[in-house]
Every structure is written in structure tokens, then in C-alpha cells.
Length: 261
Image 1 (cartoon, helix red, strand yellow):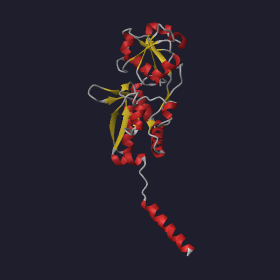
Image 2 (cartoon, helix red, strand yellow):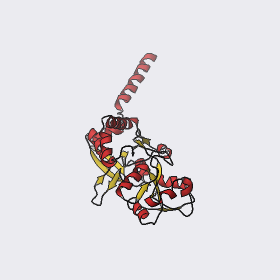
Image 3 (cartoon, helix red, strand yellow):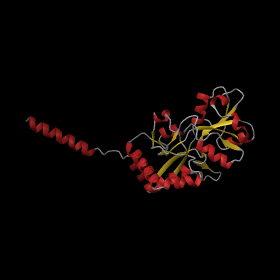
Image 4 (cartoon, helix red, strand yellow):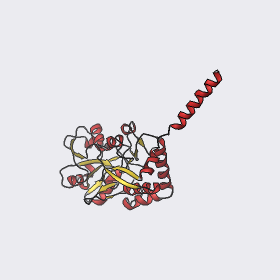
């Protein structure tokens, strides 16, 4: 009798287990929905830029399209800001965050990162004739120095941590460089890649010691922390993009000088 009851209980558990369908992975959901929702700020050349006509361009815009093509889906751009990037990810508004995103432990606490894209540390961007004045943290961390930064990103975090004595004003990341050229600000702390790109784009601005970072940094893509399947797919796609030269080809269209990551 005991064996019969055990058999019946086992049979019931098997029925229940087969009756419960596992939820699709994030990867499966992206494919089934036919779209890749990409959170991007659209204000950070050369990675992501949104023109007045609504068109996006940049290194990570091209890479987002490559990722979507590998999945056989379309891209849906989700406009975000540096302040709302992580909250938007946690709210489930996007499948991936792209656009020159720096790896930080604070972000890592709540989300996944893809494998590293590039090393890219913080340096000063200044008017060329004043490069000698802003070579070190000590030179910049002075009450007379006017800093300008976009709100909510790692640049602002760096300033609060290492340059508390300097004057800080927050500005949008599209016209911020004109503030330097117009002498309304003296220094912008930013990633070497952006500084080098803006140096080429805007004569009169110079990246200070672009290979000698004031703070080490890495860039990667931001991913929801719901399952590993999606992260593994993105990591493998990125790995293949690098070993086949596709990633380097995209980079060369925006950053022409070798070694200026």
C-alpha cells in the first residue's frame, strides 16, 4: 500500500512538473518580439548622437544594428539620459544600454555588463593654449578653475570625488564643448575617446595627456540582470565582432588615429 501511495505521489509531481512551462529567456523574448530595445543617450559622440531629425549615429549605434541583425530583429531606440540610464534598465524599458557607457561598481550592483569593449580613462579637455595649466589633479582642483560637466554620469562623479575645490557647472553634453571655446569654462573632465574625438571636431580644444589617465576606466554594454542567457549571447556576438575585425572597422569610421580608444 505504501509503494502504491508513493507511486501516485511521484506521478502527480511529474504531471505538475510537465504542466509548468518555463518562462522564455531574455534572448528568446527579444527574438519572439522581433525587436531589440536599445537605451542610449544620443549625446555622446563618437558613440551615440541623435540629430535634430531624430536619426541616430555613432560607434555604438552601428554596433546595435549589428547585434539586431545577428538576431534577425529590428532596433527600437529608447531615449534616455545619464541620470535615467540605470533606472530605465531596471524598469525593463530596454534590452541593452549602449553609447560609451563606463563600467562602475555602482552600476554592476544592479545590472550586468558585457565583456569589455575598450580601456578608456578620464583626462582633461581644455583650450589648446592653456594645456600647461591643467596637467594634474592638483592644478585643476583650485577655486579659480571653472569645470563644466554633463549631469549624472561618471564625469560628474569624478569631479565630486577628486576636484571638490574647483567651480562646477552642469551643462548638456551636446553644446558643452562650446562653453570651453567661448571661455565660459576652463576644463572638462571626460573619457579620452571623447576628448580625442572633440579635439578633431573642434579646432582650439586639446586632449591633455590622452594616454595618461587621471582615472582608469573601461567601457562595456549595460544589460539587465534577469538571466545569463542574454549576457552570454551578447558576449559571444561581441567576441566574434572583434576577432573578425567588424568592431575595428566600425571604430575606424569614427576614430581614425590608431590607439586612440
